[in-house]
Length: 457
Image (cartoon, rainbow, N blue to C red):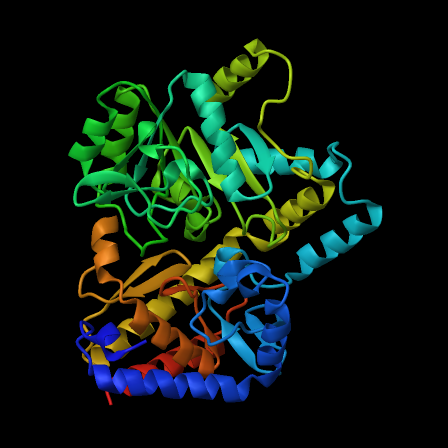
């Protein structure tokens, strides 16, 4: 990191560089056991951790966790932090929710997986249909798998190959979606390792909120589906323009394509997700990491028409492995965790509490930014909010990308960690859980105010 990394932040670059060095020194001094464990971990794990993303935090080395419960994470050096990252949404409803813990403990004693359904499967299927409004469901291990499997079902059902996604999107590790718009031209994302196929042969990328671009992408009549988050959340939160989805849905259907919504993050919008809260009618829906309380599981739902066409495609195919599903998919353990989460944790009351809490967070962030005269914006979707380094929320992926200031982002994250608060390391996202308290919010806002002051010294 050097002073040039801060040149376009509007803040004093030399001061930010000094602050970054001081925060790194503070972190190193306070976390000797994590440092020692990081050294041991690096000897045998590629890129220094069991998942290389664990080293993508702003810290000099990865924190090692002792335990996590509710909205708190305690590291091996004994520091307890208020957690607004919540496993980057995997623990949206809090860590170690007692109903999920008890359900998993009880199911472990009765067996984890048999490649056969349990009684919980019937209840979960009924509840998914009731809550999300789609009649037919399948399970997967992750949202990445669910998106990948859905693309296969949709292509088989429609006989079409082309996919439309939005610039800057993220739908897990599905190769098909790693296409960007660069100076108006489509190209495979530079960061995609090991890709040998030209993904643009079957993927079209357009900007979010651009209806003419969407219409042009659909005009060829060869698009199987549009895969989208109803609100973009990964490159930076991007809200749909008023009326955008009503017109987009009409365009998609007019061209014989399907709408697949990935609600892994926007489940924060309410018990039925963003689609139910805002009157969207997708042909298919993906729900990933938070849906089973953090136990590896995802589910995807299909409309009656799509389910009929998908089943017909399967029945008419030659016998053999379909390439859809994995052995541990829909395990008894996952079904038990799903049932506990849906019945006792992710309730309407819990979602209301989460949204109320996040509204307090967003309001407090705005007050702090105004107090310090920083031209940053705050955007909220239900229990999820995000601050971005610009005066107005972006309307598409290109605008969101242009607001990114990686060095400043890392400095803010590290400074908050040193003050007992965790937010998502990949962008400036904060998530409120049902057990996030007013004291937790107060601790966050006090730390944020202190960090903003330090940035301006």
